[in-house]
Length: 351
Figure 1 (cartoon, rainbow, N blue to C red):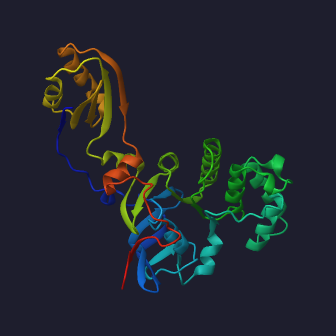
Figure 2 (cartoon, helix red, strand yellow):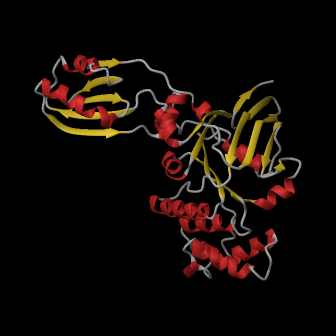
Figure 3 (spheres, rainbow, N blue to C red):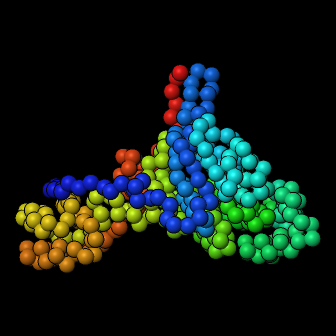
């Protein structure tokens, strides 16, 4: 196997990831959360700062234990930060919690539906808890059931629903009082691909009503399809924040080009590197794997090298970096290798 690389460094995603122009509806400034449990201290959120712009879908990505859910619990007034300040709308967390609850909706990771009630009755019951006016509540419930494509199941017990149908009902339930901000904690975890796609459509519909959405997920595809900006968290810290495209551009290797061949030529790899257009080239069995920035742009020059050596190509594919690749680049490991966030989270140490 032959292998060659060219050095290069990533641009700083945190520097480029500042909030775009617009009204900042959430402001987080040096927020930390420390849990003390007998003989040890756990830092679940560690000096995190960023802003969220009104109307955007903002993604919080990271493995279990990254601090995502703890940060959401702070912003939704369930717990107070150990240090730092956070503002939701004009209100400060831990000082104006009642006002904050009036402008947010929350869809937690674990289901809180009453499965013995009908879908309609679940919405009406929850609407009364939220203080939605009785005169508009019935129409509002049916409107949201239509948004969730559940009108035909409105008067059926929720226990008869699929996992995807329950999740869609929970999401619109959080939208009953028309909140300015909607927090969705792992909204599609455990769902099949079709159900996930339906939930994605629903999230886009709600965002189209100018609702700011904060989405926590460890599904990279979900974040890439839905979010305007994405913050990566790991071990309690914010490690990168930018648009999905800028995150991927920060990977030095760029696009991955894979070319199928029948037979290798010893001079091919040095000739490819000599073009100065690629980052690396590697021969593996009947494939040549090349990394390059703007793969489609440099492909004609790469093909010319193969033709110079009279090497027939059996296949050509170009794959752009994924957000999973970004996380590996930032941390050196895959996204799904984390400790359980709900048990401890963050970074632990004995005092």
